[in-house]
Image (cartoon, rainbow, N blue to C red):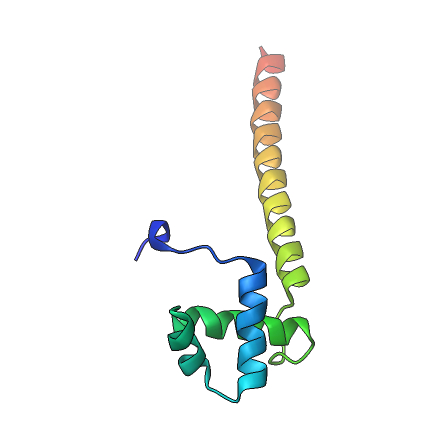
Length: 99
């Protein structure tokens, strides 16, 4: 299923759904069915909320850590591209100066 079929839910909706899981005593699957959403989505939101509260599985990243990782990976990609361009430019100018 492509991302064009992915519904976007507000942060408030996600928070309320997670609160229902915490307070209702019902399973994630039951709450998801009541709200008309996929249990995989709700399970993911719930797992992330637990990680953000410091209750996640060992090594699980908080939302802030995920965002930082995304930002650092993007910066790394950009720097790698810059390095490649500089290498090519250096090789070009070395060849030019040998003439």
